[in-house]
Image 1: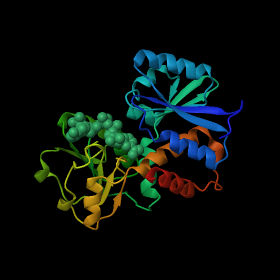
Image 2: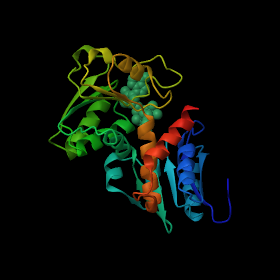
Image 3: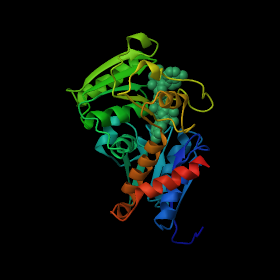
Image 4: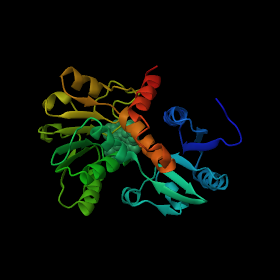
Length: 289
Ligand code: NAP
């Protein structure tokens, strides 16, 4: 590991960050592309500390950083400019520093869509069901609507939160059909779904026996996607797989959103010479170890 006076610093700020995979992903990207940079994770105690940290990162001329829970919204008040998509979502996960001017972006939705495109899955004119209506669901729903999905069904524990997301989607994409159901109304939820995405933490470590919705009530046309990546394959994904259905786990989205952060920070990496599939496979094999 070479560190010298030219080494650039990138980082993640959030709380907690101890289980974050972002340092592994970004340091691997730097390593495979021979970039003299390091990516660290900083646990930020509270909002007062956040303000000081952002001033510090600006003063240190850190070229870029990621922001995770619980500061994805709060960070906006310290930025000079916010990208249009991030403005719609009202949340930031990537910050670029251009000569002291901090610009905020959100790459979560793009990361999700890329994982479908990489598998040549076209969602135009299709029907999706999202379980959950939180931050990740917002990014995914807006990106699906942008990509031409026909209908989005939102299933959530708190129906008011589902309606808020419905209102947001309809305000930007009035032609997309959006319906909402309470999670506990399982018997009423439509079954003819082409893309089913779990965006809740249900099934995440340590509650690995939990399942957001039973895959057996859907059909073989349904693609099952769980954005959880700890464990790599949740009970939801394993059950769908046992039924012979197509599945995608959350690691693809996680790595893709990091690649999009890199695209914002280091545009020069994005020529046809960079073998992103090879880099992704290498990162996944390290995570599986
Ligand atoms: P969030 O904003 O807190 O939203 C959580 C959502 O899950 C809400 O809709 C909430 O419902 C629902 N929920 C939470 N606990 C629940 C429970 N016990 N039973 C039923 N519903 C429950 O969180 P987020 O940022 O969207 O993240 C959600 C998950 O996605 C996390 O597991 C996170 O690790 C994962 N994630 C993955 C990626 C990736 O790149 N793969 C990116 C972002 C997030 P209510 O509205 O009723 O509270």
